[in-house]
Amino acid sequence: MKYRELGHTGLMASEIGMGCEGFAEDECRMAMKLFDLAEEKGINYFDLYASDPAMRRAVGEALKGRREKFLIQSHICSVWKDGQYLRTRNLEEVKAGFEEMMKLLDTDYLDVGMIHYCDSLKDWDDIVNNGVLDYALQLKAEGRIHHVGLSSHNPVVALKAVETGKIEVLMFSVNPCYDLQPASENVEDLWADAAYEKQLINMDPDREKLYETCQRLGVGITVMKAFGGGDLLNAELSPAGAALTVSQCIHYALSRPAVAVVLAGAKTVEQLQESIAYEDAPEEEKDYAAALASFPKISWSGHCMYCSHCAPCPMQISVADVTKFLNLAKAQGEVPETVREHYKVLEHHASECIQCGVCETRCPFGVDIRKNMREAAEKFGY
Image 1 (cartoon, one colour):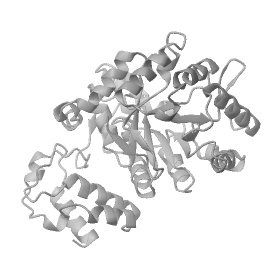
Image 2 (tube, rainbow, N blue to C red; image 1 turned 180 degrees about the vertical axis):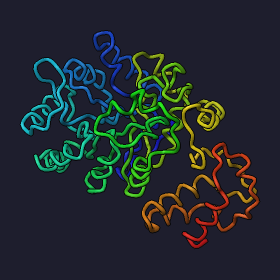
Image 3 (tube, one colour; image 1 turned 90 degrees about the horizontal axis):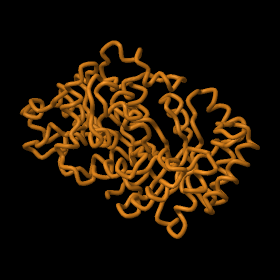
Image 4 (cartoon, rainbow, N blue to C red; image 1 turned 135 degrees about the vertical axis):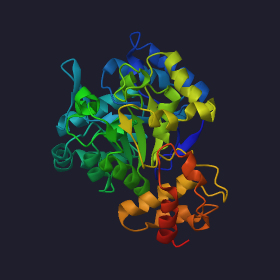
């Protein structure tokens, strides 16, 4: 299992994590089986957005004797009321729900306390003005949560939140189809059939800016919906009109700036094993570029997907990394210090490009790589 630093938190998280949907299977007995497999295979990160007390209790049981082996990302504002899940911004309900969660999980702290499901600007304002954000920061000051997070499907809302500097981890929906959809306060728009009736071209600029801003600010992204609820794995259901594999979906998400963990949804041990198999899969099985380039309903023409198909460069330039740093700088209108330093430590720089164009013959997306190298050399000065 490979591990990535989760933004600037200092946490080293397994790049494959667990979503919590499967914990409820078989009257919550599946939770123990999934945690056993996770420990065996080196998964140390999981998300718990669900508020069902039975599930939380089962997770608490599964963690007994091995709490320190796992990083818990669990959700504030997700509560259980009148026998069902409720997202609330009522501060008293939020506080009571947090205390109940901690008791059921039988833990003194959460590694990431995730403010739950914010998809509208008004809702973010409520979180700020109703005291929810202050409560999360208070819990951090008390050591009961170590880092403050936010879950969202809306890039405009998520961007506003991370730009406050108070959100350290963002849980966000990332996959090749959702990345083409504009911001919406209705999460259902992300997978609505009508959204994909016409061919879609290139990543939504708000989503691209969000990823790049998180990278610049050191906000770690944990990915939900990498498989689009399973639709991307089925050619008949996929909005793209063609299927991807589990490894291709995971690799796509892990290639986005700031992404540290893909939270793999699994309702069985076998499904989790399929995601874990990504770690040992050959590069050709992870490669998503050819599949994306052939999608009948989607085109990324002229857009760098950081897939590294352009390699090898005769001058040994890491074209994907140079392009990523160029895009980060362009998005900010300047060269942030962190981007400058990351560019500096590359073994070879854009100024070394001999403009041979061989890379462009390999690019599945028709990117003007030579132009990008010229721009990067000018932007960074070498």
